[in-house]
Amino acid sequence: MNYRHAFHAGNFADVVKHLVLTRIIAYLTRKDAPFRVIDTHAGVGLYDLYADAAERTGEWLEGIAPLVERGLPEAAAALAAPYLAAVRAQNPDGVLRYYPGSPFIARHMLRGQDRLMALELHPADAEALKENFAGDIQTRVTRLDGWAAMGTHLPPKEKRGLVLVDPPFEEKGEFARMVQSLEKAHKRWPGGIYAYWYPLKAPDEVAAYVKALEATGIRKILRLELRVRRPATPPRLHGTGMIVVNPPFVLEAEMAALLPALADLLGEEGRGSWSVDWVAAE
Image 1 (cartoon, one colour):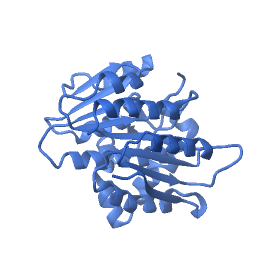
Image 2 (cartoon, helix red, strand yellow):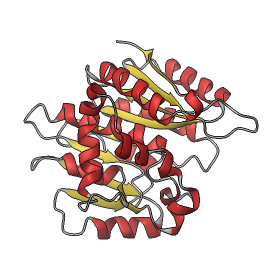
Image 3 (cartoon, rainbow, N blue to C red):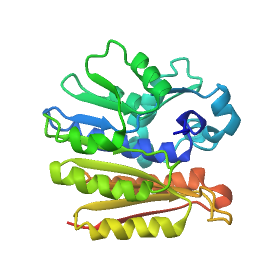
Image 4 (cartoon, rainbow, N blue to C red):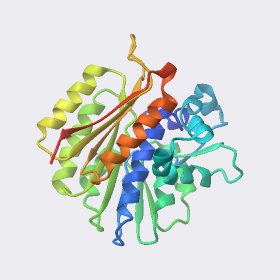
């Protein structure tokens, strides 16, 4: 696997993915009972936006940068506050340089009774992730293929929580693996919340993915999408999507408030668009 998230840290897809992550965790914290976040493709956890990898692509300049610099309308800004607080926690001098990946964002929001399990297969990234969480008794870092966790690590002992699946899409068959992993995980833990990220690049592949999700018979599947440009030929990333299974009841309305604001902020030449709909309702 050659994928390294450092090249894409803080881009528009990260913004949407991490906003969804923080809204789900914010909901989970409404109850005192402990919960667990399982991050199946965790990366290294923290990224230097001034390092060569991030500077080579500059994708963060069209993602987190305008969000921090220009902000969002009042209602959307309130929903984005936990996410931006996690980003600012890594940049205490007020200068945007470090971007927290999903394990750092999740960890920022955990209470004393909650736990994080961060999985990463890439040997160098797994080692860096362990170093970043060294001494943290609430976080367990394991070098492991995240797909394997969908069978062996569920359900968590807390019986509450979220599984975040953010595969690299460097190999063929990732959409099929996502469906297969959801079917396996849902059988073991039908009450868990599952959040799957996917790229909007090849419309036919996404349509087939949604059809396969419908065919599983699993209920309560919410689809969230943000498009920042029109589809192109040859294909290039034009948007980002999230599938959330068993979403908090507030998530649909929250994302219907956030996504239009993000489309206005991040869309190229006024071409941003968004959608919130159900693949399978309750």
